[in-house]
Image 1: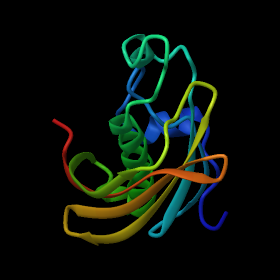
Image 2: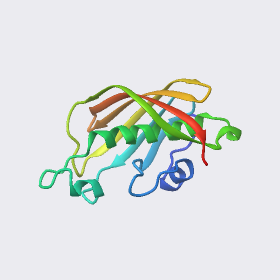
Image 3: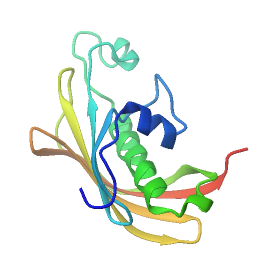
Length: 150
């Protein structure tokens, strides 16, 4: 790890506004401010969305995999911004070139790899890849905008 320590759930909660049941990052393994982050989401059968997606064949909705990547990007943005600029909240404003390569099921561990491509004023562009067992399950480009919390 270069400039920051791994983050446990308390560190993540201090950096993201999301809470259960919508918090999609369980741990940060590595973050290089201004460059990249590696985080994990442990997929449990107890996740609320499995009640309806799909009964008898539980599959993580692809949009929630993208949300997990966006939340990891949010932690990366927090770590990359000067302390005096951290009074904002990041909003997901776009995704591009999104591909889903295989299903994600209960018991899987999603490894979330996100890179900061560019920041211009209040716009942040990231690329993200979600993996299970070292194999890509989803990839996307993410655009987020920071704005006031209230």
